[in-house]
Length: 371
Image (cartoon, rainbow, N blue to C red):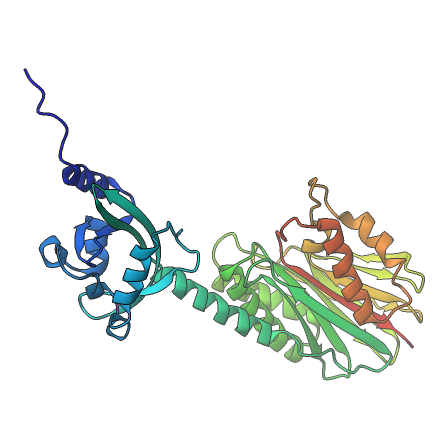
């Protein structure tokens, strides 16, 4: 039995093209399509017969076709490999006339005395749509955060939230109450990203409406718990701390659903931990939450409410920031304004994390009693 010899080059290329996991085509120096695999045909909606031998301009929007031949000529005059996603985002045009965003990788290839270009193409329509939705969600979420702290007699207030992704699961809010008190609310939805961001916006809206209309913030948390159970996916939950400040008495009451906060004295020493008083919202129906007894504040005392993105921030060695570093850091900033304390806390955490990526949303609110 004799061997039939190696397959012709074009047959070998056809086999390679068809086996490739990427949409690919091959174009000659006359801009003619000489090879195309089934993935590229599927993206553009053509058959092999409709595409083979045609000018490559059939695959780009009409408004780019006039200038494209010169671009091809320039490439063949100085052929060089170009990686996908590096300055090569372009538009393709399907057979139906629909334009779509795509990325290209170009690789010159010599066969005999001819030079061709191999084009690997990725349709990034879904990625672009997801990016647009993510940007929109980020804009909506940021718009829902307080634009500025409220003017509240005897208190200096500041807050900031930085998501780990374009969208985050943290939120905070300032809610004026009918009796002249002020509720400061901070929350953290499990996880981070688009889904938690939606639940974050929902939980914040529920809490704001209910805190303003119920007899106390504890009742508002109880009702919000039931609403979140109805609205959220299984396994999602929200930790919340609601702090209610009274400017007349210089006191605060609080209710925590899986969340705690801290009271520091004028020197930055930890004075009191405001511990959680119940389960996180969304875990179990029928939970009852109630406000604590009043906690009297002294001039210079300040409350730090934050999400676990602060204490769970990791160093390059994997060490967590932790509560001990938090309390130590407050001694160095206690004499400053609430805004300065918030910004300093972020800087301290950033310095601790160094170049390690932020792996969780970070939110902090500081309320300082001035008397």
